Amino acid sequence: MLPETKWLTLVDPVTLRVKQRVHLPAQADSGSFAAPQLAGASNVLWLGYGHSLYRLDPTTGRILLTESLPGTATSISIDPSGHRLYVGVEVMPSQNSQDLVIEWDALTGSRLASAPTGGLGLAGPQVAAAADGVWISYATGMLGAVEHRSATGLAELVAPQHQHTNGIHVFVFGGTLWLVDGMAQQVACGDPLTGVITASSQETSPEAIVADANGSYLGGFDGIGFLQPDPSCPH
Image 1 (cartoon, rainbow, N blue to C red):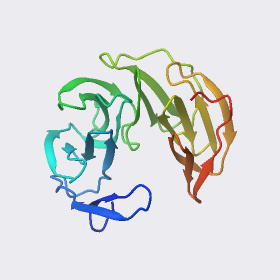
Image 2: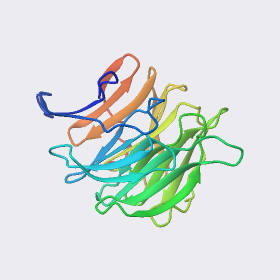
Image 3: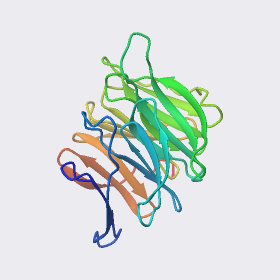
């Protein structure tokens, strides 16, 4: 997506040739820029953009369904089965407000559950769907925090407590939980069911990880590189 043109672009996964471009929907809260958040599975594609959640046709980008959000979408993620969609939402700061994580049926768009979480006024919560629920990371202003919540009602699950900075982000790919802490310059892998960390390494300004059956890739301020996971990382 190019900020100046606000297009959503479909590219060939091998050649990166542009196959389709569609204009992003207009935002009701157009006075402030909100980055689009995308999540997809084999047969579904969802877009969180501003205060709205859209189901799109994966082939054409046509809007199939629109849902309103109680704030700005800061991240979205679909579980490995393709059935559950999680959305991190930053609400308007007020005396008693809290940011939210909301669970939806990824196939029908039905809202299933919501729960308060952290990140208010600090870029909101980041979500990473797993087989049993969702991992959530956020800044608190002093340190960062990570939560693990169940797919059943978003009840908070017990997880190991580790110290993180405000730069913590969580990702789940395949059978691996990744914790990427840009401020601590650390990347750790662990069990997505328990949160137990099995290996970690120091990396230069890491920001995000993308992984599939062909490999793992680490993005940072200085570019993108191939990441060789430690053999003890779950997979």
